[in-house]
Image (cartoon, rainbow, N blue to C red; front, side, top):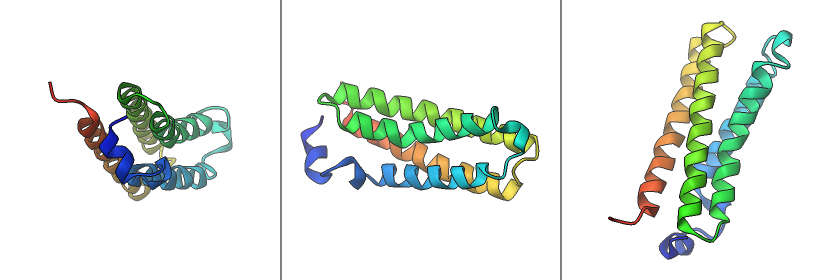
Length: 127
């Protein structure tokens, strides 16, 4: 991992992007409690899994010994974020979420997306 990154951040828990992703997971779990019962084996676990994957991959990548591994896990976190955004839009289309809740969750996810993208750029060596 980039040495400069290690000096600024002692643990993955110090990463603001990880903290925001954890807050999003908590909010997702609370909101999915209100999804229709027929989604107990459908959208609910899918949404929860994709949201959990975001901070999990940020943390796992941080723990890797090589910058390229870290970047790969950040890319996986981004893919999970896109998956979550899609699932939330499905919920909006099915009227499981209000437009206001969707907008709030979507904006939080976009902020995390921008933060991950910025972190990837900082870790990527200049060519």
